[in-house]
Length: 181
Image (tube, rainbow, N blue to C red; front, side, top):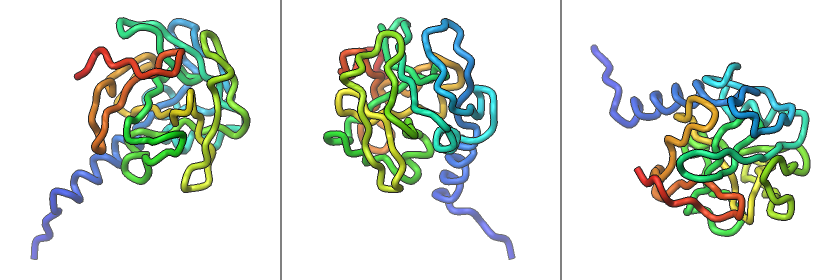
């Protein structure tokens, strides 16, 4: 007897493979991001997903800025673009499970630090449903995107993954909605 995988099983397997490819490293080609002491992963240099790499971090996350054709936006300590999700209401993160595999939350083990171009007064944290601490900016939980392969990539810009839009975040805390895909 031959077993067939149903399409949803294939989609979950593909998403898991993408999540394992993940993001992370201390490489940043323009020097705009500061080091936070977190280990990297995937296409950015090490193994594992961003969520697991960040959760093993021994220090506070540092948030900085980067400039591109979209303008100036937030990045993590490895230069990975940070996004907000329109579905999040207030500072509560609602991206869990498969969503958090595709859009890993920006985790911290201490009070987040403001790097170049970031307003410390807008940095905060929120407790996730799994008990981990996620960085917020102007009340928005922050995420990376597993399909961003290099520091500064913005392939998630304008995506409507998991039912709502994802946007890069400006230093004033507002979504940058240009570059919709």
